[in-house]
Amino acid sequence: MTALSIDIARKEYTPSDIVALEGLRFNVEKGSFVSLVGPSGAGKSTLLKLILGIDRAFDGSIHFLDGGTRIGCVFQEPRLMPWLSTLENILLVTGDGPGERERARELITATGLAGFEDAFPRELSGGMQRRAALARAFAVQPSLLLMDEPFVSLDRPAASALRELLLDLWRETRPTILYVTHDLHEALALADRVVFIRRRPGRVVLDFSIDLPRPRSVDDVAIHALHQELLESHPGLLQGILREEREAMPDG
Amino acid sequence: MPAPGTVLVALSQHLTEGNLLFHLAATLARVLAAFAVAMVVGSIMGIAMGRWRRADYSLDGALVLGLNIPALVIIILCYVWFGLTEAAAILAVSINKIPTVAVTMREGARAVDRQLMDVATAFDLPPSRTLRKVYLPQLYPYFMAAARSGLALTWKVVLVVELLGRSSGVGFQLGLFFQMFDIAGILAYTLAFAAVILTLEAAVLRPADRRVARWRA
Image 1 (cartoon, one colour):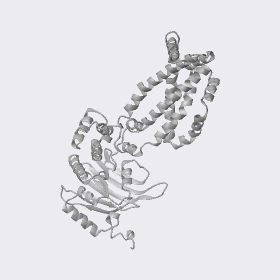
Image 2: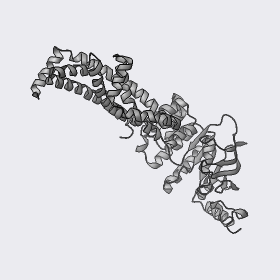
Image 3: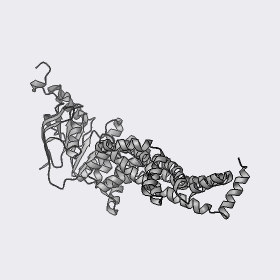
Image 4: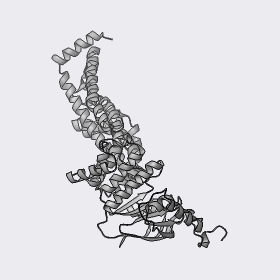
């Protein structure tokens, strides 16, 4: 079943007239974990803004499975309200009630933030702020979770721990996840499927399913092998260029 | 220049035998009324100007004018047009204060963090919650700054308003003392009023400031 259907005919920025996305089409299956990989400037964050309804100026359509799609999201920066405590930041998105408080506390514990319920964001480390942002996203019990390089700029152990945590939470409630990253290792380790997009205008160049068994980690030999294999057959993949795609080749 | 002792004696006389408390209360009531009007109107105006370019364009001329017209001109015009009434007095003080509040609040509205507003949109928060928990907290520091500078300006102007067209209040009394050349009386009233303002600052504004800025510490 398709949870999210994206069909962006064209998205350009005004007044610069830069075409950010053009002919970008793909579907996301319900409950699946899809990674979106592309070079910076490929319009990945732009796409998330369109899906979230932050930016509505585009040609095309974005369809959800049904009207009851609850969207959670994690941005590149934690984006917690500095004037709200950890608990209040979570209750901000869920509303405040006994049930919501109970669930918020469970998530705070699950994300390893127990004891920091009443701490303000500036009192939390970068990693803890990202945990709080993750807890906030899961607090709305999302059926669709959008993530924009959520663990970027963290050290490797912290990032690994957060990926583990994300996968645990995903297994429990099974939301559909669209995960933007420019790190192919991370994408291959996390996702069921990787959608590669090229830059300006952004569009899908390769849709790649990953059949490796879970659990996997970014350091697995199989992930490294897959990474190498992909880049050998498509050397320009991370720049958004496929070998077959002549128009994109420099001397084609 | 009277000796400090003379001033204190005058102060206690005005307190016990005179009408110092009555005049002090009259002035304070005017200060609070004008202050409240100016904060509300100035905030709405400033936020609108910071938020919408159209509002900024159409109100900017009035704002520059308001910032530069001498307080005395506004006071005289208000009394001439609306009569020597309490409402005219408070209106005159408010008009003097509104532009500075608006300028500060406009800065605040311009500095609102788009990224945090996007969080509210992404999680589809109800508008009232977005306003209370995401938008307004970003404006509180500006509001507090406007309030503090505002209180100072307000009470200075209120005294002039009272001198020119009221028959009560500290300003009115100072006018009488001036005619009688009673410098001890002037200083006694000044002392009393300064004490009230300092108390207000310490008991209301500073705690409010601390409470609002708790998360920054």
